[in-house]
Image 1 (spheres, rainbow, N blue to C red):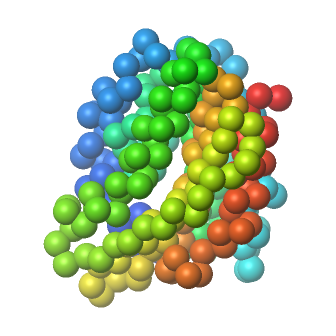
Image 2 (cartoon, rainbow, N blue to C red):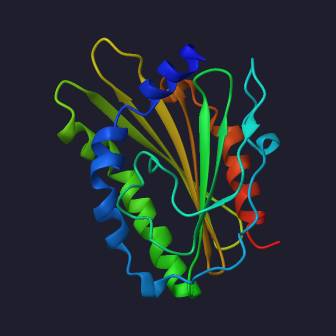
Amino acid sequence: MLKRSIAIAAVTTATALGAGLAAPAALATVPTTTVAAATTAPGFLTGRDLPPHPSSPWYTGRVTRGIPDPVPFCLDRALPATGVWHRTFGTEYDTGAVQVSVRAASGTSAARLAAALEREVAACAADWLRKTPGGTASWQDYGKVAVEEGAHVYGVHTSIPESEPGVNLFGIGRDGSTVTVVRWAEMGTLAQAPVKAFKKTVVTAVNKLNP
C-alpha cells in the first residue's frame, strides 16, 4: 500500500497547487444556472472498460454525486458546482483513473462546458509549469473521437527533479446535454501511455452516458 500511495502522489504532482488551492474558484467558473440539478446519475464506466493494467485488476469505486475530492489534475477551474457525478478507479500500483460526468441544462450549455474543459486541459501543462519552478511539462493533442456529439483526447506529462514523471490521458465527450471527462494517470511518459486503448475507453464512456 505504501508503494501505491507514493506512486499516486507522484502522478498527481500538481494536486496541491491546482486542485487544492484553486477549488473554490473552480466552482464559480461555470454558473450554476447553466447546469441541471440531476436527480439520476449518467451511465458510468466500469473497471473492465479501462485500458488493461499488466499486473493488477482495476478496482471500481461507487458512483457518487458531486465533484471528486481532490479535484482531478487539470480540471480544477472548469467543473461546475451542480449536476455533477463521479467514479474513481484504482489498481495495486500507481495507475489510477476517474470519470466525472455532468448533466447540463441543455445541449448548448453542455457544448460550452465541453469546450471549457478542453481549453483547461490544453492549457494545463503551461499552467503547471508557471506554478512549479524547476519542473518540466508537455502535452499532446491526440485528436477527436467519433462518438455521439463528439469527444477529444489529450495527454499531459509532468516531472519535477528527483521524482518520478507522471503521465495523464484525458478524454472529454458529450452526448446531448450530458458531458463526461475521463482521466487516466500513472508514472511514466507520453510515449508509454496506452492512447489507442484509452480512445476505446472514451468511446465507451460517452456511449454509456444516457442509458
